[in-house]
Length: 149
Ligand code: TYD
Image 1 (cartoon, protein in one colour):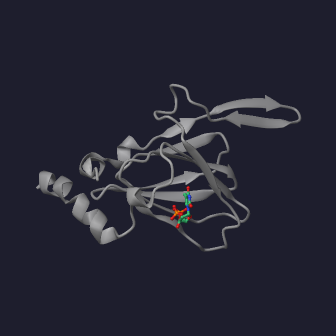
Image 2 (image 1 turned 120 degrees about the vertical axis):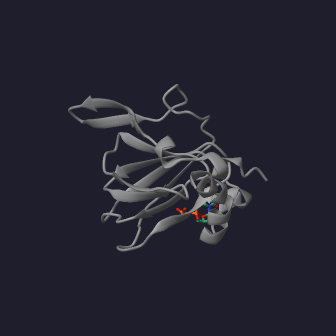
């Protein structure tokens, strides 16, 4: 299993990507497609919806999978953690995605009522790609903290 991403990932590798937006009087349309703006080949799309108030999602990192998260409706916060630094990003625009690189722990919270999180991923679903245990995540990112000392 490749754990290299955990050794090298940084929160500042996670960036906001503005998606194409076609504005019309009868509504807007945005596109996520394989082009130079998305730095991975799109293999999977899934979405979170009907999220009860106060609930959290995520709470894991990936070994290889890149993800683009979009608040296609409503808003939520993404807490990013690379084992050294934490950053909170508010997603509240239907045409802005947050690129989350492998090796970065993410928690999604503060979902507004009726919000929908679209997730575009570089890999097919594989439980083996997940790190769900925070202590294991700290272990995998330990070398970065050692470098800082
Ligand atoms: P998970 O990725 O833990 O959700 P989140 O990060 O949003 O909290 O997925 C929850 C469950 O859904 C997981 O146990 C298996 C299933 N699942 C799939 O079957 N396929 C998928 O592509 C995803 C993302 C999840």
